[in-house]
Image (cartoon, rainbow, N blue to C red; front, side, top):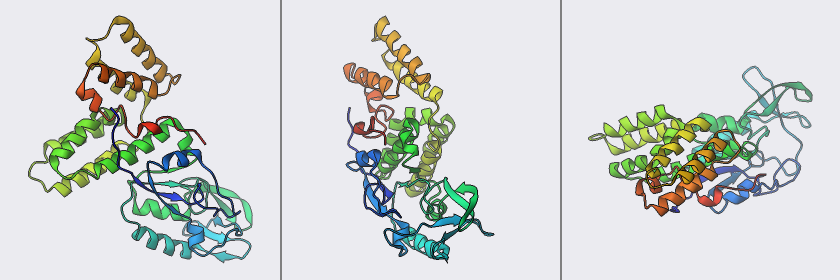
Length: 314
């Protein structure tokens, strides 16, 4: 059954389809970002423009320094490190609640992991890669929140993980009392098992022992645990096990050919010949056909809006 979803609030690099603010004056259309617009409240920002650099502008680079990479503009010789740090800290301080970050890869300000670090401002060879200066501040202030770049989101499993996290977190943040949190956990049980059986058990114990504790404390601990449980993309085998668990609710009602068909789909999924959506669609159809409320309610069948299950890749 289709769900109604809250809109996650995501900070996004403005150059990804929002404004022509790249150093070259370009706007970078991104099909995945475009597909998300209807379902997400985006907060666009270009840190380099925000610190006063124009469009177009001379390139900036990360340059190796004693205390870590420095942001330098080779043409002017200006070191922009402290200006960027001051902007980043102030901006993130006033950002308010967000469910995640979608940032530009390879950018000296926004890259999460792959900004080039040079030996000298003029170039002198790449001596390493790492986060951009603004992205480093994002990680320091919001270490648990989901963060991805537009390049990695073309990978279906990484994209599924990111969307599962940000939409799950948005839904979790609407929970206001312990019974509702217990209902959330029941709804996400199979999905959490697909991502981390260990953390799923920890969350179950947290709720079992929650009676009498202040609810904000329990909710905060659950949110941290939910983000830890989903911090890595699901493993194919663990996801297949969760799908098989859901399949067990229909075994008595299905004929031999339908059972065999599902098990064949599962093999194809595990061996990456079929996307996750194939077995999920079959399970969802059986949940409706046999009016199985437990499976039909599971977030495993719809971990984020159905329209985003098959988005065009950039």
